Image (cartoon, helix red, strand yellow):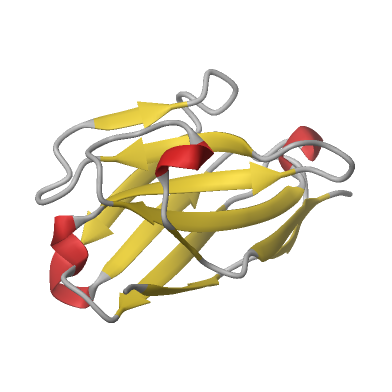
Length: 124
C-alpha cells in the first residue's frame, strides 16, 4: 500500500509559477506510474499529467497544460513533481497526486492510491 502526501500549493498571480511535490511511502515508488489530477471548484476531477513507471520516460498531458506544465519523478527520493509555469486563473483547483499499478494511465479510475490534495489558487 502506498501513502502519498502533496505539498507546494498556494496563491500565485497569473503568469507565475509553482512546483508541486508528492512524496510517496509504503512500497516501491518506481513500480508505480504516477499522475497529477485537479478538481476546480464545482467541477469534476480531471487529469493534468501522467508519467510512466520506472524511469518515467513517457509522459502525457492534458491539452490545457501542454507547454506550461512538466511532470517528473525522482525515484531516489520517492517524489513526484509538477512544475507549473505561466499559470492562469483557470488552473485554480485542488491538485492531487495518484499512483497506479498500471502503466501510464489517464483515467482517474485506473489509479489506486491518492493523496489528500493541495490547493492552487491563481489570482491577482
